[in-house]
Amino acid sequence: MSRACSSALLVWLSASACVAQPSGEPEVASTRPGGVRPKQGPSCVASGGDAVALVDGLRGGCGWSLSVDDAASLDGSAHLSLRALTLVTAETETDSALVGEGAAPQACGPTLARCEAEGVGTSLGPVLILRRLGGESEVPEQIYIGWVEDGRLGFAPSWGEQRSVVDHTRIGPVFALAPYDCGGALLLLPTPRLPEASGEQVPVALAARGGRWHIDEISETGEARPPSEAAPAEVSGCRPLFSSVP
Image (cartoon, rainbow, N blue to C red; front, side):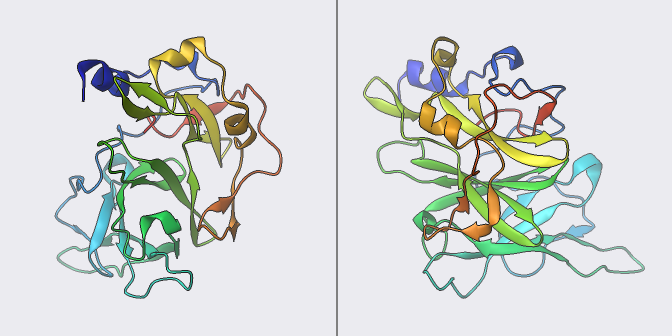
């Protein structure tokens, strides 16, 4: 990949350029490449199967583990379980608690082999990232954002259809949906991802998908249901849950 392409991927716009007009700083660290395990204290133990991703807890607390269940969902997509890490001390051991479960997007395959998984601990709990691997370059074909509501784990696509190209290499969209804490509710809002966003408008199709997605109704592709009404073009009082947009 060229130097221009790499620079475009790594540069993050200042907060003043965000469409969502976030207030305050995110409480989480930058997102990490898929498969990298965060540092956990010796008392925090993953259980319930081999983890495909570990998520840091906030302020030094135990985090969460994401695992793929042995049996796939009825539609052939991977079935995932998100569990709180077990706290083990010299005197006692706390059983691992199931936080949420659900199907991954069908594009990730029945064993999640087509996607890389990672997660971020946030003020609203663990938020997951699935990167749909592509064959053209190291840049993924799609990013899925995952979270839990009422014990159900669901995912929404972050990238729209419009993608930028640098030196004949696709580097992803200029804008993408990113998670925000808006008064205790998780909203996915259009957010600048590449430097050229300062001179472009948010694509209409992406703007229409900004808002609160619904996990209670999963589509045939294993994705959450888009909001019935798009969020306003400018949203105040929302805090970004990611310090950079994947």
